[in-house]
Image (cartoon, rainbow, N blue to C red; front, side, top):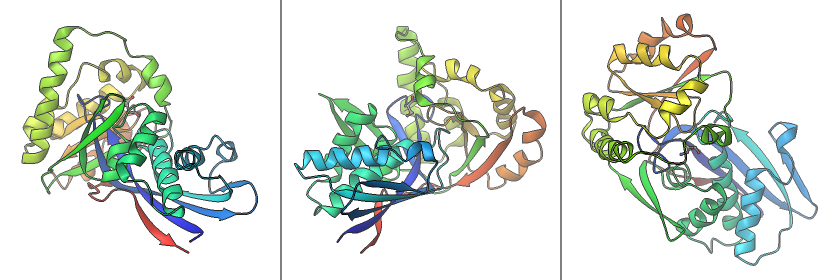
Length: 296
Ligand code: HSE
């Protein structure tokens, strides 16, 4: 085999209080094709600025080959991304996962998925997007002695996810720079207790519990100031009864609901109350993680 295409789902990280720990795979995908060649690196399907050797798919591809003590040969990488860049839906994690899995498949599948998670987590620094991208579904992860440990949690089948995606990006690096380095004990207790409730509410399909639990004191109070429309959209979504949080580091805002008509309800009002242009993307949970969709 000399060519493989990897499909990786989008992911939403944090789910409110589960900062750097909770994540969920969603039904939006980035496909990345790796074809080994005799000459150099060629990257297509993305903006010129991402076609160099610092492309995350190539960086993780090389990291996996290094861990296998295998030579990096020429490679053509083609990226077909539905996941929007810099919007808090796991676009970077998707490239890291694709690169790791692509290299592993082309060189004989010697590493386990956990092995690939270990390598990519060392690059990303937190496993909350990577874990659901690899394993699918709802995950919680911890890093123990430098290594990520992930478990899947059950999800009620009736949840609807609605991503509200603005026309501007925010880099994760910047969104982390506005956070404090130390927190009060009361804030830690608040997040631990709310986080446990989020997982149970998602399992039970309890929208009221989820709405109350999906609040946090670690990141959203600081990041909301980066999004001029945050307050207006949160107020609007709360009138519908849906649960609401920032997706990952933002700027996408995520609604989780049992109401099949939420999109229609918001469509009438959303862009009338906002300064930026917001796109609504209805999504469901993707229970399958990254996978091979084509080989030659
Ligand atoms: N947990 C991360 C954050 C997700 O909120 O900064 C973004 O990668």
